[in-house]
Image 1 (cartoon, rainbow, N blue to C red):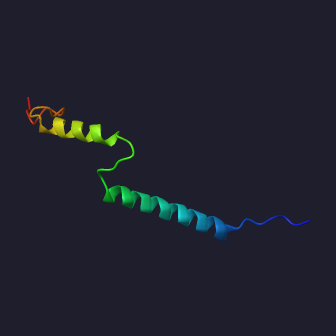
Image 2 (cartoon, helix red, strand yellow):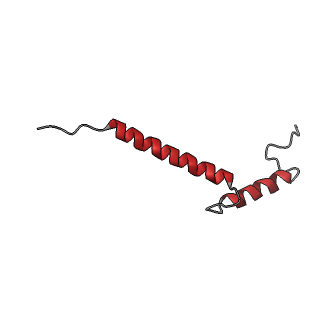
Image 3 (cartoon, helix red, strand yellow):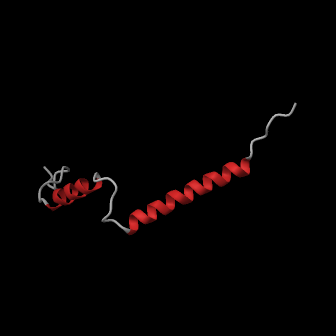
Length: 66
């Protein structure tokens, strides 16, 4: 009776294909920043820009030492 050996080369190939697919998806997403799947990134970017533009909003104290 023989025990089936794992096919490591097949598993490695599948991992490489998955990694390549993910990399291509990331590149496609980066190439078209206007077409986003989810809108979760857009409000976060707007809030970060608005907060940075407000003077005196620095939580570290703004450099005043006392």
